Amino acid sequence: MTHEVRRAGSPVGAHVDAGAEASATGRGAKGPDELRRQIEQTRHELGDTVEELAGKMDVRGRARARAEDLRDRAGAMTVQMRSSAAHAGEVGARYRRPAVIAGAVIAVATGAVMVRRRRC
Image 1 (tube, rainbow, N blue to C red):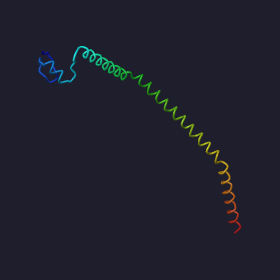
Image 2: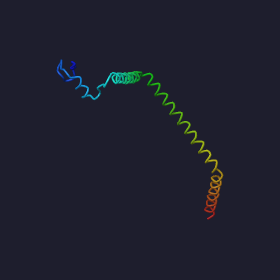
Image 3: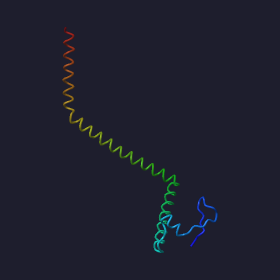
Image 4: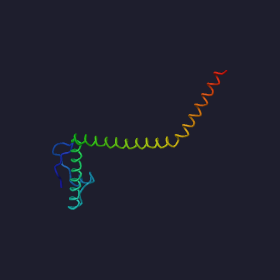
């Protein structure tokens, strides 16, 4: 059984045996059910490919999706920054009294040194 098949690089009208073709590609159908399954799989793959190409052609939709993604990221960063600021405020409040005391001690010590230098 031969079929007239033209492949890239083969002369016009080259004959290829269907059995050889099936064994060469490794995709030969073993029966009508297998053939139907392969056809259905090929249709599914083709549908996915067409859907993917249509998505790539939808520039406005892609731009909207990108803008939405950037808005989501900005929102997440805002939440993170607010959380960090709140944490810093809590830490500052916790150590405020010791910091004020330490500052007062340093100010008194500096004043004492300055007064002492003027007397000498």
